[in-house]
Amino acid sequence: MMRILVAEDDELLGSGIQSSLSGSGYAVDWVKDGQSALNFLNAGPYDLVILDLGLPRKSGLQIMAQLRDAGQAVPVLMLTARDTVADRVAGLDSGADDYMVKPFDLDELLARIRALLRRRAGRAAPLIRYGDIELDPASHLVTNRGLAVDMSPREFFLLLELLENQGRVMSRPALEEKLYSGDDPVESNALEVHIHHLRKKLGNELIRTVRGVGYIVDKTA
Ligand code: CA
Image 1: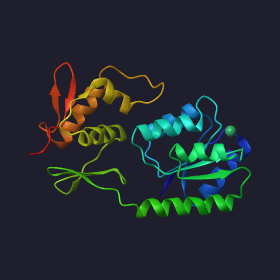
Image 2: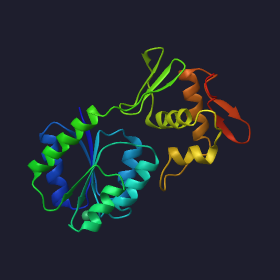
Image 3: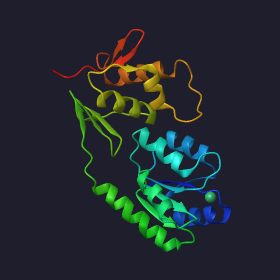
Image 4: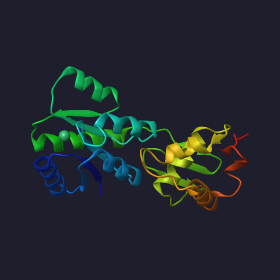
């Protein structure tokens, strides 16, 4: 089942979207402020996000920036109350995939969602390979010698970050920043715990500790 996150503080519109999406067979989580949206996105993954530009606690643009900074490529449909060129440009420049101006027809929203999900399915995301390990950024699938490896979203993003930076030592703060966005408290040993899990799942030799600095995945020969 496709999972969609709806971030909209307008009660009437939010509940309308939620019931319309649920009625169309999507699994929907509805949040009413920007910080909750980020928390839900971190716990994800979602197949699509419907994001109101004007949200309390964190704006739609701030959320977009954090999402794309964290390397999350989930499609985002942005909603706004104001139809100005500046708003539209800001929304699309921030990395949103589509844009609707309120008030809009729920049937049109559903059609745009289907189009975005189709486009996403067809998008060729390059696989990242490292030895016997394959990571697909689009589907969040990780395989080792062709076998699927179970992974939490945070483990996934940590592995993605390390594999995208092969041969470079990643400092603890840099990795923690990728794992936790916004005001989430970072438990002091959380990073070690995730690294420990990754090593257990993918082999001890994959991630090397650089004492006092951070972690590295060595370049393959
Ligand atoms: Ca709003």
